[in-house]
Amino acid sequence: MKERLREITVGSDPDLKSEIVEYNGEKFEVRQPTVATRSEILSKSGMSVTDAKGNEVNFGNAQIAAVIFCTYVPGTDDRVFEEEDVPMLRQQPAGSFVDKLSRVAMRLMNVDSEEEAKN
Image (cartoon, rainbow, N blue to C red; front, side, top):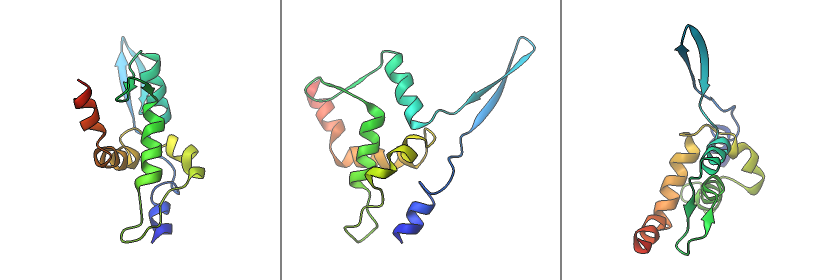
């Protein structure tokens, strides 16, 4: 089962979406960012995520670590992803399985509760 889970996630090519935008008679292609690119965009824009102690956290790295350490083959202690999967996980589209899995992992880690307590 682990191999099947890996095959449909890190074992397949990322399916990045794009849209054509017309402006002033010209066409531009706007592409969906990868997890890594989204993290870079957030960093360059001055947007940052901080932990409960006020330390800046790289959102993309936090997501990927949560996916690696919190995602298991159901009913086992066998993790689906490994440290070697980091490059493939970083190249997945924003909004892909990385976001879906990390959202649940972060919730289970009580990340939101720590942020609310800080405010």
